[in-house]
Image (cartoon, rainbow, N blue to C red; front, side, top):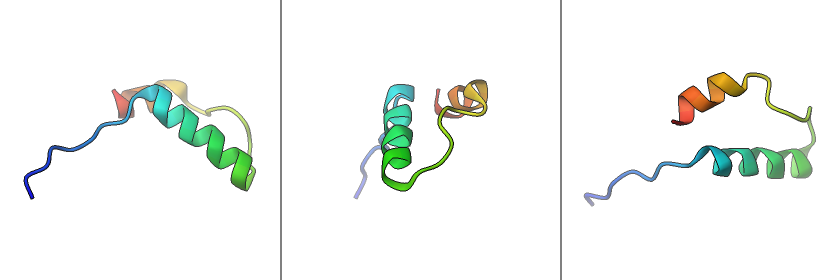
Length: 41
């Protein structure tokens, strides 16, 4: 099983976040957009 890792784009992570908020509730928005971008990119 020598599969390469799959990396998510910032847009995908944001979409997953929005879907999670819709399904489970929580505060809207991203607290630290720069931190998220640094972690994803």
